[in-house]
Amino acid sequence: MDAIDHVVMNAHLHYLGMAARVIEPVMKLAVLTCMDARIDAAALLGLRPGDAHVIRNAGGRASGDALRSLAISQAILGTREVMVLHHTDCALGRFTESDLAERITAATGHPFAEELGCFTDPIDAVLEDVDRLRGYTGLVHRDKVRGFMYDLAANALREVLERKSAC
Image (cartoon, rainbow, N blue to C red; front, side, top):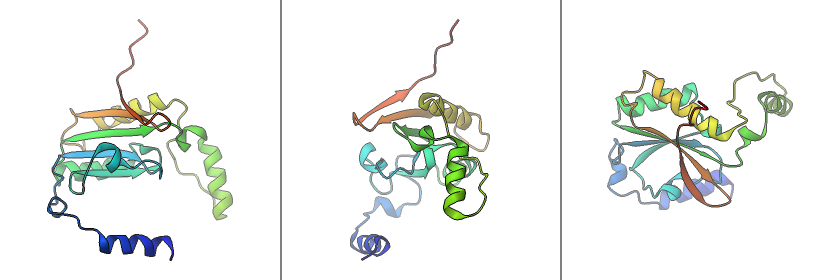
């Protein structure tokens, strides 16, 4: 059985319950996180189906597509808070844009020049995404956007607060 057949079978066996039948997330929460398979956002945060929108991409970055998804999440589906959730040992922090573009080009045989959101400092990446969300006028609620770092090795979640100025 291949992976797709396996997850389709799981879907047939899964009972979602009443909360999952409501279109608007019960907790009024949207989580922007990484697509890394080691991150189980629902288990980590204690979420059940219907509790929150979980938007995933490489690095959990506030990319154009993530911004559009969050705009719909808030304006149409009623979320009020956004949790940015990055993690340690992220591939976007281990490679440069050009490294990844070269690897994608080599794998596909086609030129690749899209922005991927690579970063050198993971804390700065969280703060950058929080700032981008707070400044994005497509969001109805920009006052409750907070950033977090999940340490995979320690299994610990901590909030990333604004850096203090050097003055």
